[in-house]
Figure 1: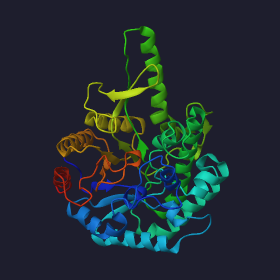
Figure 2 (figure 1 turned 45 degrees about the vertical axis):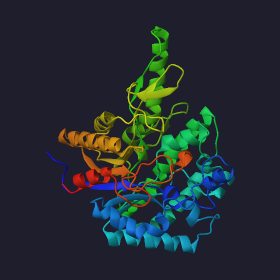
Figure 3 (figure 1 turned 45 degrees about the horizontal axis):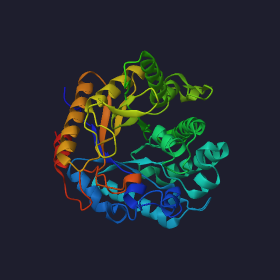
Figure 4 (figure 1 turned 90 degrees about the vertical axis):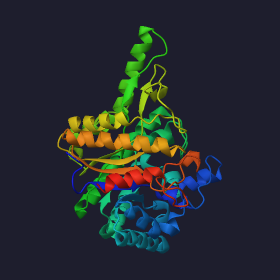
Length: 405
């Protein structure tokens, strides 16, 4: 069996990374504080989007996920920016004209300052249930006719971890209790977005960041192995079980928080979308490392492992039977495009093998199309199939070969 007819080949990116940070966003404040490199104008997508869509389409990459930046659309509470609305409307129409189907993300790590800083963001029940819900509803009404699909919240675990546990993203907290609270809140926000967007008849997908996790030790002490296994179980619950139980059984089970019975979460979302970059070794002290432990490590500190993608696809098929899956984000941060090309080929083979085994995979989106801003790494780690001057790399030719087969 080959990749099925109608398979979605695409790319993914975010507004902050391709257009630069919005002046009213939490990320711009983070830049102003010197916490991260300046994003500037991103990779120029804000003015070059029409040509970029044409470039992607010419390589057979006819689906693209982008984010509509909330801080651009509503820089002040309750006041929408007409220029930003026109900008995104024109952008979405240009994609349609180029033959590119757009999937829209509503939260990709950044927020308006008035929501994230002033009102407490998703951790505040009213901010989440009123302001977030109002924004989701408004975006659906304003842009819905130009959207092929929705992927409302990007990587809940990565967002909660970077923002409330590791202190890397705004608001920069290092508080395990706040992390678990934030993880629960962002899952609830994702569910609320699905509830509001599903009525439009447009598919709504998750973007869960998933990693297989394995216990690892640095000595032969039995107690160390026991602690590593216990910590691995905790990591697994964070990455996997918490939200799988919600979508399967209607029970949101975030570690460190009381279980919440939410029956309407069972069966929610049209597709189970996810990002995959690597697996992880988990040690007795809760530190993590690459898996396999001797694998080649990229400049962002993790080891791309294509076999792990096959593990993710099969686990999702086992734990959420009958649910269609979407590889919403898979990429390789490295200046070595030969390595990227090899990793991409192996990842595509893993996807094809899963399909041959009966796993219902609907699409594969590469992160990213064109080299862009990578958060705290700035522009130092390229992920794109094309460089910032829009020159194709060898990995772009491989992507086109698979997309056109």
